[in-house]
Length: 309
Image 1 (cartoon, rainbow, N blue to C red):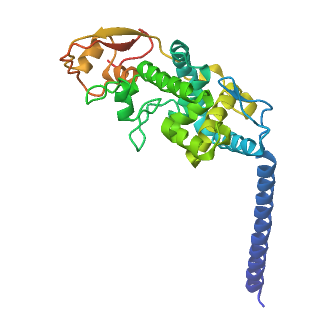
Image 2: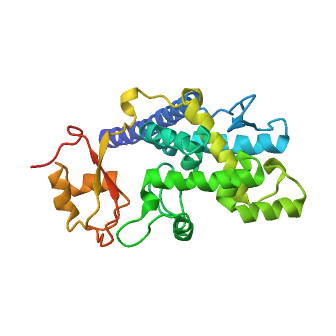
């Protein structure tokens, strides 16, 4: 074998060995990364609180079925971190508005967590057509006196919708004698819950066998209460400045038609978008108020929004 051939062979052998070394190095790097991942990423079981209650009514956590259902909702909502963090941020913005309304209309403070379970504190519309923070169907909203048409949908008016939610829930409490059952009936309907009480021969929500959604409903509310009351306990760490904050507003009485809400907004130093953010119940660009009904439109205080020129 001539010198050139020997050199070529050496190069080939060296190259193959180099590939082997690289493969060993890559494998070693993968193993190191895997060990780091295992050591740094851990998911923990959540210890259930020793005592829980809703609106002053004790949750029977000594019952193994109740413990498992409660554990499920704590796990699901704790480890769906992005959704829970959004709710924590929104709660800081909207609870200061909801809490005094609940007190004014005679509901226990814990019902603010029902609004969380219903809508995530967002003016959403379900596939079935339920709308707003309290998720009223059109028929129910109208039955309780909310105006719902092409121009106005008061299901999106937080103050008025909270009043209706309170009326509904207080009636349920009077019927069933329990705030917990009233909360369940908000999801399943008074008639539906009453039918199951009669059919199953029990008189306590925690003894009822219900469909999956309603069976989980009260426990979702309780999970939101527990996590929002103790966010750091469940691993949610933030600074005060990370949270969303309420914008102070004042109310303007309108008892005439409004031809153009974009122009109306500019008269108060804001734009149409900001007007709609604070008044999502206004559903069109104008208001055909032929009857002279009184509406109260919220306008943000000066200095909270920067307007483009």
